[in-house]
Length: 280
Ligand code: ADP
Ligand code: ZN
Ligand code: MG
Image (cartoon, rainbow, N blue to C red):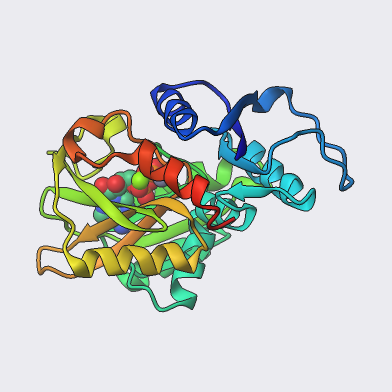
């Protein structure tokens, strides 16, 4: 197979993916997203049949995947998956459409309307930017005054595209959340433990080994299917009562901080999936 690996920066992940693909006799070209200029026609300027989309920019990943698919290439993950996973409001809608269990959530476009809706639900709730990652600007609102502060910033700064509030049920987790990797099927996962309620490893949570039970694997696979994801990381929130919800789906799987703990050979699994010709 001929693969174009589209990247923003060649991180540990991209190095390991490149090696895993080359071990399987794939011809891999590294293509930096910033240098790509794509014409709006079906003409291809690559020999590749498959594109592994590893751009760290949602804007670039979504447009590039869309245009490369238009040119007839197999893109992993697909443009549809990237569009749905990159926007948390659209992820929630896709999950809801398939009846996948998730925290209750709503979207509002006006400060007062949002405050009224939160008041009706009761505190605490969580709000987060629809576009974002690594736990940035995820906020728990414990009171009306906290909500007023956060929402006045949300609606008083930025442009029209920023003036949307995603509000979720606050899930009182037992000190960790769970991540299940779905590469065609659930292949493993990790537990992220933290003293803080925000459990991103980018924010200091400690990755731990986690044998994924069948119910969690099935839930993660249902979530991946709801967004058409070929290779995704599905984040699950467990309640203290043992219920389990899907929180988000990450389309550009990061694993450098946790590869030792999980014992899941993600670069090999991803490379095998690409070689198999599945998905896209
Ligand atoms: P990001 O894309 O920035 O990782 P997440 O939605 O995954 O955004 O939120 C980051 C972290 O915050 C999660 O891993 C989880 O620990 C915590 N978190 C997010 N939403 C909730 C929620 N509704 N209830 C409880 N914890 C949450
Ligand atoms: Zn995320
Ligand atoms: Mg997350």
